[in-house]
Image 1 (tube, rainbow, N blue to C red):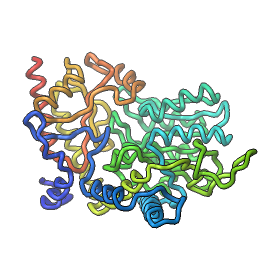
Image 2: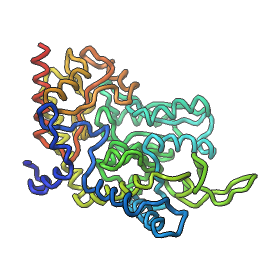
Image 3: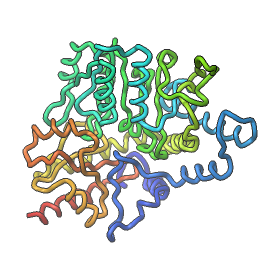
Image 4: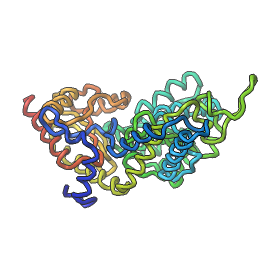
Length: 419
């Protein structure tokens, strides 16, 4: 392993929990470098979820029989685990289907509650994933608020100067990613909070939460959204954190069962937090699985995971910078975390990704990464025939420096092959 973070023995135990990493892809050991899209799943967490489904599953909150009680306890324990993980209160944790639902929830609820009004300004950045761009852009056309951007430079980097320049906009809401899923840049959230101290701050945590423990109280964020599937948990489960005083003010986005207090033919009153925002039957096993996943990550040591991913990130960036036939996007300092997006000169990104899989067993992602507007920014600064997409290699804590070396070997092979 050759890492100071954990011993070879401990790392072997981690690898044993991800059997797919022993798979052969076209005769080569699988090197999974598509973690920014979705992470692999832990065998031990899957086994616990299987036990929950087989022996303890029921609908929650609505019955007093044994299975309902056991399922309800497991669901609410998961909420408490998420709250502790973020340094929040359990009533400030709302389960959603993921980051995309969390952002859509907030746009609609803030408008319905009169907090976001026509002519107000929402500030986002040019590096946002579509999940934190499309809802604001489209709904601004219906609701009448304005959308402005923190500008990125030609490498897709958000600089301190660009953030300071946007201060003059005086936005009602600032909604920004914690880490770009294309450039890998970790955003200076403390600085953003300081500069926009009078704005409601929403953080898209989809990329950063799996790699870095966020203290929502210390950061003083108003809302944080993230998805479980990017941190080993099941698909279809996510979290919306909101300050209690704000959650109490805003109107629910979804209406139906469970989220009500009293219903008449004339009107409705809502349940207490957080149930006011959890209409219908939730993804019960998904939430329970997210709780098990947090237990698993904590048992490994989340601080160790953060240090190891930082170590891998810098190694990945260093090795990529050695290749003079590759164009890299994003910063080239220690703010570049967990992933690298790049293009090989003269080769389409889809061809690069296909050859890496076919010849080296390396799984990467090619495309626009749900960030089409950012692709147009990168194209302006590109020195190659830019096809409005990139290849992206992204690491997680079950990856190794050897995985990165195999990627580099594959890229050198592609250069020779196309020559």
